[in-house]
Length: 99
Length: 532
Image 1: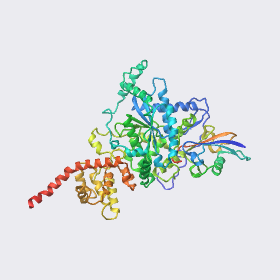
Image 2: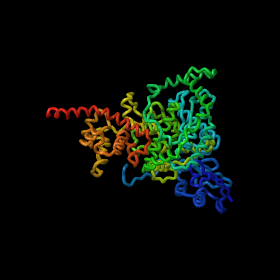
Image 3: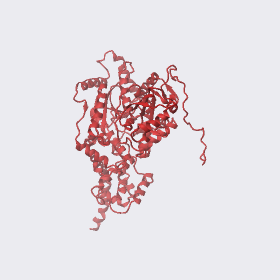
């Protein structure tokens, strides 16, 4: 059971999640470890309340949305290939104007 | 180079997933937390230093803010302006001799009336922001966009700058040097302006009354504002109009409260997008002032953009890591489609390009740095009539005979159906564009004889009472403001100060042209005298 804290913070990303900024999420068990790609798919299916195209684009997040894993840039962690650990903190910050 | 089947493999600066070492490039010791500018990885401490240093370097490089000046910080609540606010606090609080020295004030413009928020939402947002502002101990102003309806028309006039010529580097240095030896005696400053400003500031902090919200708004005001924005058909024009009105409000507040500088929080990414979308909107002529560091178009109040070197990624990370409070307020374009307006489309274009080619924004930024405004001649008479009514930039629709703009007007006229009324207005607007040459220009303009006739009749002969308004406004606007106005269905919804200023300028122009009209009447009178 992977416990995660998801924050959608500032810049309006929380609008797509029902205006809730912090989410504590428990991901279902599976044999291989979760990576960011799967997490995004999971978020899109389970948490996004509206307008998925404003958050996810294809495989990855929409350009203009920053992702921090444990307060570090996800580019340093390998972006989509990063394997999630227990109690990781993932933050999505939108730098765009609209949404 | 320009073949059909181009092979671009490996030649372009394509983004590779960075395999950077885990050590900070600056101190080489700590682990990295952030990548900036495609490859530079910083640790937390070095990033903070870099961020703070950039702000002060930006202010120091462009020496426009003098010690002791009153500077108005335009805070929208978003990340960039909140970051700017925290940088100003940081810069003013240092005890080092190189601390920033100016007197800040804060302005927040509540645009909820235009973007359709309810009163409770607006009050909530304002309350959140007020708590942030109070923590800074600076004087703040909360202004509702509805107050734009009651501005005086003097807002649209460019004031003369306080000093006749632009301040030179030596006077700046002299002003700063004055302050350094007198740190011992805080009460006696040889620099009078600093002393006045400081006593003024202490007075202000005593008076709780002046601080904070200006007069409350009535639902009628909100309705009028909603009507104004509802009469604009396209989101592009809405955003443009909102921006213009916001600028007027900020300018008015700055003038009445005695601020000589305004700091806007436009980040590098935002300015790159603004540059490209301004070109699409027809504002190419004023690119340098719209996206440069300092914007002197209003004369007495100079707008500066100290955040123009920060990308939005840097700002977002800084705010997150160092807990800078910012309030997200949904605006006109929140959750809008990508193709809703020119500004949104440009934003999505630049942002997408940036992910694959990380030097996009910085390239645009460097290009914009090379743009300079030519210094206008210091003749205030010509300046007044040559400024656009809404955006106060230099009018770029002065007509030459065979300009591209003329061609646009002619094709516009030809493509409209024949009939009385609106079709003649393009010709009439062409005529009073420029002073003395206008009588010669009239003969060549597309309106031809019609425009002369309309001119002598003061535009009343071939149009209804409403049409002169369209005519009047159009001739006083720059190209892109004309496009914005064209998208409006109800011009009388515009705030009163705009309409009355338009009327004033129109009558001023009529006076200038009346000299020429007199000649023609004399010519007409002569045969009659001979005949009788």
